[in-house]
Amino acid sequence: MIKLVVTDMNGTLLNAAQKFDHSRLNQLLQRLAQHHAYFAVCSGNQYRHLRDVMAPVSANNLIYVAENGASIYWRQKQIFDGALSAKQLADFLQLYQAQPPLLQQAYIILTGSTKSYTSRGVPEALLQQARQFYANLQAVDLQKVTTPIKKISLAYTSGQPQQHVAALNQYFAGQLVAHDSGYGVIDLVRADVGKAAAVKFLQQYWQITPAETVAFGDGTNDIAMLKSAGRSYAMQNAAAEVQKAAQRITELDAEHDGVLATLEDLLVGE
Image (cartoon, rainbow, N blue to C red):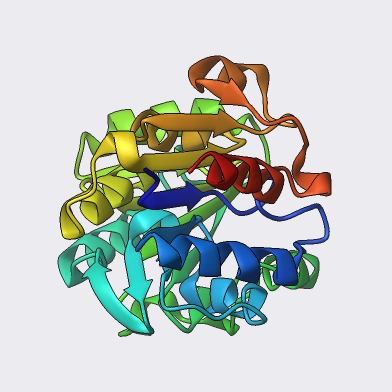
């Protein structure tokens, strides 16, 4: 019996235009609710941005896992808060100001629940691109930010994200953890935060077993999440590494509502 469905957003539930079939998902949410099952959208995106994307959908069993697991919301209430401590943020900003080689070629965005912040002087083209994914993005003096910050995003101007992830994780040695967003941006979060950790939190919160959990993803940052589910699906459009890590591959890709089609078939079996 399915009790929890977890899906990544970009490239998984959402197509390239960040759209999905609202009516179809609403129907699936109603069917899941009949089985007292939950549907969680799990993304590196900011909570407010996710709410905007999902605005046409409304259901009591819809959960938002935002900022790579740093925020979990259910019925518009936060049930998990993985914000960085004030000291963690201050230490990072002090390090960033010193411009060590590891951070010299990175622009940073500090993400809160409703606002995001970047440094003054960031090129306008980068700001416009970032505003597609970060709600209420403001260019400010980062040292004066007092809003609780859920994640630190690093956009590198050169090099491969995978190389930067490995270097950042070695540098911060478990104090912060770097996740590749899959879109050229690296997210730094608390060491106990991540998509897989969020799935385990939800499983414990409602006493749901991995066998009762279904997960969908397309990026390497989804692999740990997929392994937290008893049934895991890589998208047809997913990288080979992700398809190898998942138990199954969807018949349809994200451009053709592969998540929704797979769920419809699974619920027929239920």
